[in-house]
Length: 175
Image 1 (cartoon, rainbow, N blue to C red):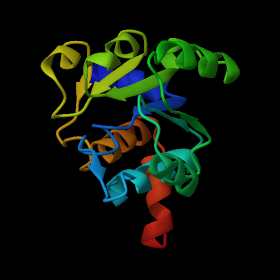
Image 2 (tube, helix red, strand yellow):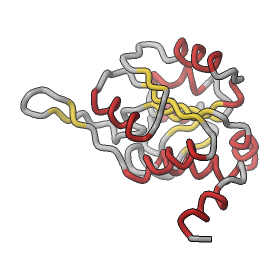
Image 3 (cartoon, rainbow, N blue to C red):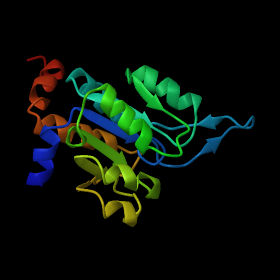
Image 4 (cartoon, rainbow, N blue to C red):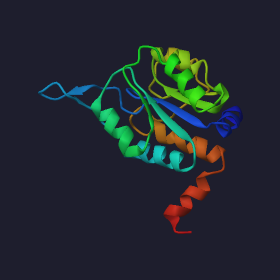
């Protein structure tokens, strides 16, 4: 865990896969063929806390969904990349725009398509119910599954490693 905390201290950008990480991976369609996504409120709150602490957040998705766009807007996430067949190119673009190095990025994934980014970033994370092949590349595997608090777990890990958690708690504890 020591190596994880050391790497988490350097994180300035959290990149999240969407399906299977921010959601539980299921795709729900209504009668008119529109996608419905289910997001965990604590994951969203963790993202907001991370943003408040000065850590940027980006969402990467292989699919394109209006629900994901709206969720990103609701949370104040400025960097959303959808319809991706390759996540490395937008990762490099975003890293350059934010003037970051690989070791300043945490990526959370769950599946085979996430391995190229897991291999590049300073803090590679896979959700607890991710595939074994992806877990082989993870430095940290969440206890919680995707769409059910795994993102919040990662946000807290980063905030605590950076010494920002206690300051953020004061807002809620009235101290």
